[in-house]
Image 1 (cartoon, rainbow, N blue to C red):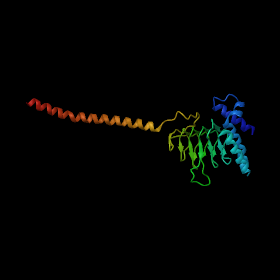
Image 2: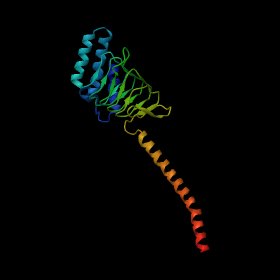
Image 3: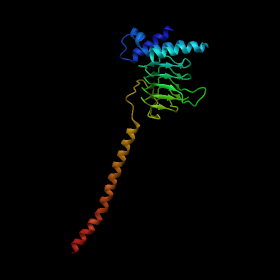
Length: 227
């Protein structure tokens, strides 16, 4: 228990430059409190103390505004930054060394039974306000941009953005620095490509018109000379 607590504090101090001390993290960080309370609730849930488990989780909601169902499986060193509005469903699975920002939902779509919440691999970053919905699988070292809505599986080492989310980068390398801001915008990239294509077509059209006018000008010049 104390080893897990030390890990939870260490990862917050590593990832949050505003964290000044271990005491500050223990007493004032809602993400730390929510993870610690969830571990107790999950123990009760697994040992069939379901009512007590839900009581602990609902008390956590009132204290932190973070709702983690006691049945959810949470790995080691989960970092919930700010945490306001975070919701993790009953059958969700979160791997080790994941980061969730405020407003994140790991929820269901309302049409699935049994396993109805997502599974996150390790080293996953989910940006602020992102929604990951349904019994889908998010691979290891995945980054999900702020505001994205993920409705399908994402393989390892990918970056996903948009509504619905789509993969815009897959480099096959382990992601070390997780950043929810510096992510390419696929819409802007497509607009740039279209603008470049239009410019090329306009150039070709102008060349074709100039070639067409050249014989006409020559013929007109010949008629003037004959006069």
